[in-house]
Length: 322
Image (cartoon, rainbow, N blue to C red; front, top):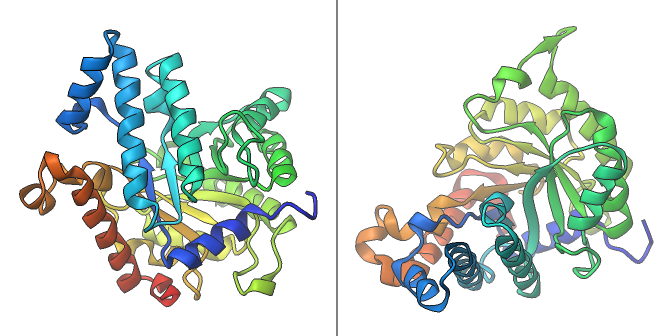
């Protein structure tokens, strides 16, 4: 990586410290749950149902970004919801990523790509812009990656990430109920997710940033570890000391702030905690539904974000960021 390119881990940790929180807002637009005014406006403007939804998703995400940009360091758009809409959805995703970066947010595109050789490198060059948001068509700072084709799946992503000051988050211990079907399989006394974790730690330690800024010695090769497995999360934090974690499962999937506490270092760094539906559609959920309702959905999203930030500060070492 060029000396002039700031590593992803440093850029991310600077933003976490600046915003004083590790809260990550997922951008998961779902047509059925969008505020009625956004649905109606897109129907008035376009005849094609796919174009309607793409336009609505873009408006919803842009307005949500305006709400959370002053509060959190990063957002995580879920590519699948946009890709389902075809070309118009993909254009909307690119615009949302661009807008988020222009708003000063770190953007992790949740696309869970994974392949080998030149195909993997093509995915990496398409998504990973890193420090320069114009260096890749999708323009993301980081990308989620599926490692289950083998270690050579990761090498092209690591190469591009190092060149561009980007990051990747490798699926290690995911938050879904069926994760153990494969991830818990044992060989020579080790689970499969432990084997993946060891590879990720080795890769991240090799490019870990120095602790000169007091931001820890983290590399730019991260791991996805779910909040729904708190014991494993704490163990993996110790097993991967140089690896930044992305922790899904907080909020709507049942994970609480106490469950994610083991993912942080003593300074309150080393992890981002994601919440998507509980913030995106807070206006439909108690206690915000009664106070705000659909006409004030942005105020509900802001209140839910602030509540998450306070919750993490109270129950994890992220409180030391204040």
